[in-house]
Length: 234
Image (cartoon, rainbow, N blue to C red; front, side):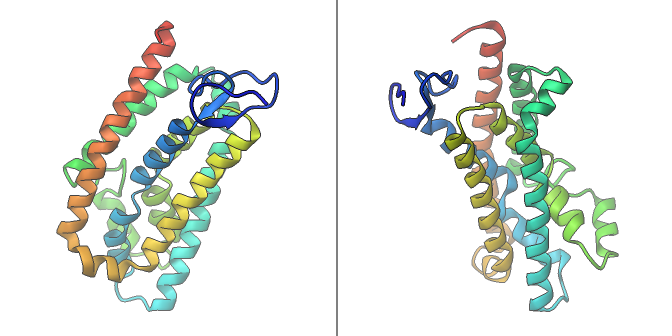
């Protein structure tokens, strides 16, 4: 095994060092950053009031079924993009620095939506989509799985996670991060009534704004890293 400076996941002997870990490790900071970004973008707490509105009048059993089904569909969407992410970028001829810049800009727009407590098509549904959703009997695919949970921001995040590469232990950890965030989202959907009772709409928006500030800073860092990588600046 080869280890580098600081804490990290060790790479097999001879494996090229991850650009973030240095010296043959995948940095714990990168893994923690991935968890925070995905958690903020998927926004388990912010999805609770939307889920409550979409399932108004449904029984507890129906809500539970819709929550589980939407999480399974979201998992399938995000895992496909994570596992095929590097191949997709290579097929499109997109370099990692360029994608980090583009991904950072998109996540920054998501952060703006969160800070101003609004729901655009980036992290929620448009008015027309909400009207269509109210007429559907099964909302687990649209709008729950997409775009509320596995929306453009979440897909961009898992593609950025996949672009880091690294040895199979690091890949498994990133897969675990996706599973952990979706598990927290499922828990939030199942506890929607309690969350709304504890926080209310105003409390939910306050939490969203705080998370949005964090996401904005991380998104700017993605852009800075992308520019640095494109021009060879460290």
